[in-house]
Image 1 (cartoon, rainbow, N blue to C red):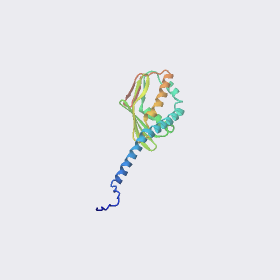
Image 2 (cartoon, rainbow, N blue to C red):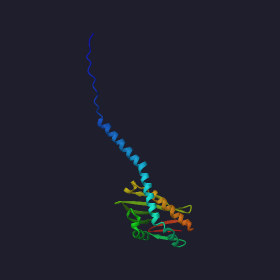
Image 3 (cartoon, helix red, strand yellow):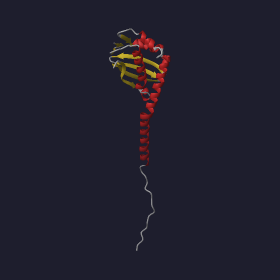
Amino acid sequence: MTMRMQQPYRRKKRRNGCLTAGVLLIWVAVALVLGYQFFVRPQVSRYVGRQVSERVAQQDLAQLPTVIAALPEGELNISAAQVNAYIDANLASLAPLDAARIEFTDGAIAADLQAFGVASRATMGLAVINGRIVAVQPRLEGPLAQFIALEDLIGPLEQTLNEQLAAQERRYSEVIIGEDTITLR
């Protein structure tokens, strides 16, 4: 009988240690990004939207019935210069906005916003649907879009405006956004 020598058990060397760690790191990063995008961002956006809406409600919306009552009957024209003059005069009450500039272009409203030291651009259209003035395709571009959904800011303001218009029996059937002017009919 011949004896065979058995070699001691040797553990195989792992050659993919860095590869495994790299793949794991990538999956953790993807999970963090998805978690932020689907869980954290919506909550932050709703929170910021609620805070801004409450601040605006406390300061400016108390004046809204008076402003609406002062509007002329019939067709109403609002220029970008009038809106920008209002923003300039009331910038302190619009915190956290540091600066804002509004432009009316053919069919859209564009706002260059600066808040928290970063600049972003918001765009949207306006339409009258079922007697209510509503924002159409609101979009926020730039760094602020990573923290705030524009819909969360516009929704409460839109609701309050329409409630005040209805309370004072103001009805508009058409919104026309032209070069430098919005016309409500």
